[in-house]
Image (cartoon, rainbow, N blue to C red; front, top):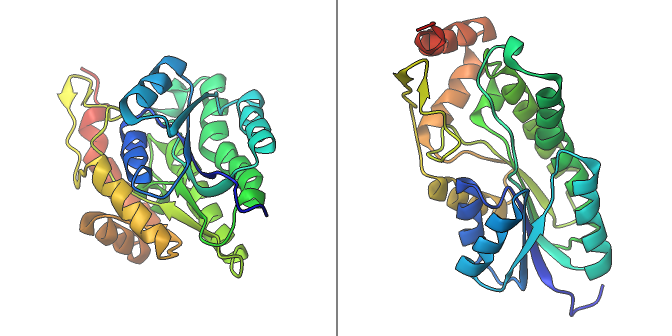
Length: 260
């Protein structure tokens, strides 16, 4: 490997609240470039204006093969030394299975499951000892969650993939970490359902999640959990039968499912 290759971080979902928090963490690292990936090109260039020339905007829709291909071609052309791959792009929707179109199902699985696996596979050949993969999973990966069942299942896939990949990478000096936050205070949260304001137990800031995730990745941990609330949740769902866990979940969200 050539010594003068650009030290690069690749961050998907860069324009959202958690994406910006990770971008700010990456700017503290010794990096030459940060490839900021999202669908909205205008928002990406605003990031560059705000955070500086290290930020390389890369508009790509990761729900389709063409978006993945764009990243693949950039890797082949620029031959970077990938120090971080943060698969933060994700899709989430609360609702009954009846409310999902076939296209929404395809897109959710493509972005939440396919894209992290494909990008990890593409980036690992460009990584060296000390490189980190962070896949943003969720506390929803710990249990089946009715009415966010597709999201929760996709995040369980991402968590299991990341932890298993970390074992396969042993001996390379590269690590993979599943980041499993609870509710994060970003614009993605649906603040109101059927006229009712939603309460989010254990709500934390995006900055706290990103800082803890980076710290845990550097330690080589295969999973990052940033709050005591989520740590307790993780322990509880290990001890309780899943049917009981789902009943408790339904008791918590039931009032939001009522018709007005």
